[in-house]
Length: 252
Image (cartoon, one colour):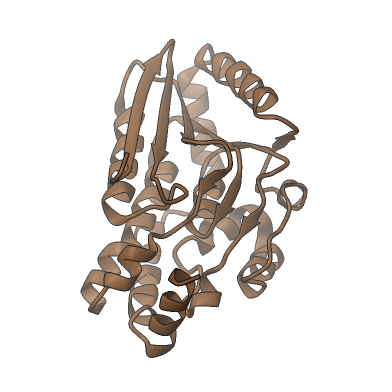
């Protein structure tokens, strides 16, 4: 799994996507695009009635952007290309006709919080703290912002974005609406996911498709909006402040 991977499994009407990367499940650009394509693919697969989205490992859902790739960005075009990968994943979650269940078994940072916010029903463990660390390295959670704000509101989004070095607990995330249910153990987490996924796999696909449309009303402009947000991040990542901050983080 040196370069990261995205696995797909279809069983009993349930399509499961599992992603991972050796660096705490961080997401380089190629992995973001594979993840977006996998979500779209299962959304179009007639065997699938519900999608489960999760990552490998036990301690971290996703550490967000790949710092190696952030350091390598040399111009606005490559910056846009990288950050638009997160836009592709969020928009794939938004536009597929199937409901998506999220599994957050551990900490989520930056883009990982965006992924948790982009599923339709999110299960987590008590160790699944969240942090939007972007401002600490001189950028901001611009691309994931609309998805996170949609779940936790402007107040919650502001808190996460401004307190960029502080973790917020899984209980905080549940109270704000990011997580729907929180469990003490991974075993209890997986049991709940299995039960809900099985129940939804037996449900009327047309009814679930209509529900999905209602859940995401008002986001029709995200195809363009998230790319515009990616341009902001792509520009800011080139600033001297951000370059120095990223190098400092990498050296810790």
